[in-house]
Image (cartoon, rainbow, N blue to C red; front, side, top):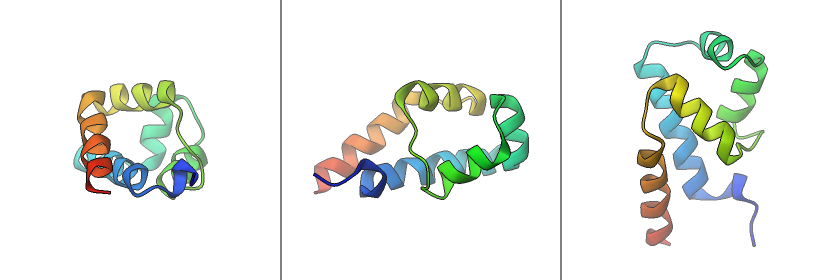
Length: 82
């Protein structure tokens, strides 16, 4: 089984989160402040160098004010394509 960080569905999820951040007009540093993490943490997630766990994902969605279920639906859709 491939590592999830290399999975197309996971990569689409991260691209969606990055897009949400950019649409909100937040820099990585500003998001890091909201999350109370280092800006390098955000960068590593967005550059697929670090994998999010489910709790981090929900917390990130909360900071971005997006519904976590939307991201889950994207994953489910991407998995169906395989």
